[in-house]
Amino acid sequence: MRKIRLIASAAALLLTLAGAHAEIVVIGNSAAAPMTKEQAVDVFLGKNQALSPVDQPEAAPIRADFYKKLTGRSLAQVKATWSRLVFSGNGQLPKELPDAAAVKKAVAADPKLVGYIDKTAVDGSVKVLLSVD
Image (cartoon, rainbow, N blue to C red; front, side, top):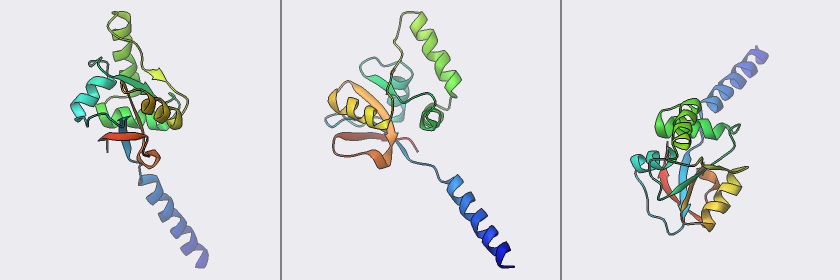
């Protein structure tokens, strides 16, 4: 009986953790103005060239989660959008950085860059422009 309770408790904990998602935020230089979801979609899909998006690695789970939550599109659909822009000469792929720390550092240093990271990684060097969740 004790084993069953232990297994049931462990299963409940795992289900709770699996359902918990990190809050993703769009970040900009500390001088940047907040943005609407529509503005963020335009930036991250190449429709607004005043700001340049930076991406996390394609293999990073946050990347697929971010694009799905922000645009409602899968990574394949986002890639197709960017491919059309690049091949038509109307855009450049977002720069891919190795991790969230690199995204934060690049965004803090350049007021024309925006990126996305987990909210828990935000510090005084960057400003939250939009919460995606």
